[in-house]
Image 1 (cartoon, rainbow, N blue to C red):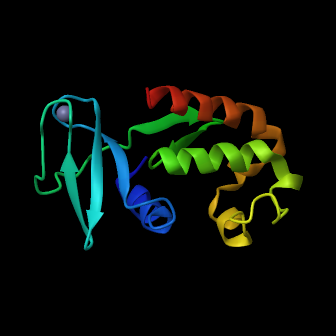
Image 2 (cartoon, rainbow, N blue to C red):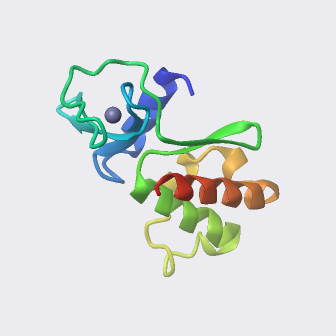
Image 3 (cartoon, rainbow, N blue to C red):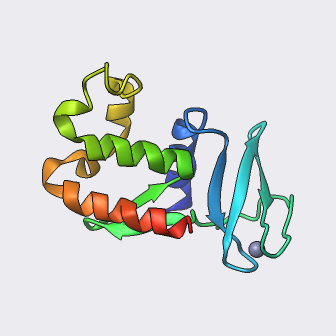
Length: 136
Ligand SMILES: [Zn+2]
């Protein structure tokens, strides 16, 4: 995914799902964490110890897989969990506030249409499962 799009999307979702995202470490290529603080990103990797460098740029999200000809991605576990519930609930149930009070129209409209389309639902659910596996 182009970095520009990713950072814009991250700004929209962060705050709703915490202030950190999982990324691929530039040094060891394992799962590392980026934390947004005061419009800056702090970086830390538990695997190789890379830590708090100035943001190097070019960092890819950890949770992303090809899906339906697009890229299915999540910033972090909370975001993934939301997508699993939201997509999994299907079109009808997810608009019922008593079940998913948080699934308001603004969240709905922030998801790309291919992701919420009924015909893609099974493939999107499989993609979300692959993301879940990457969390290890
Ligand atoms: Zn690392």
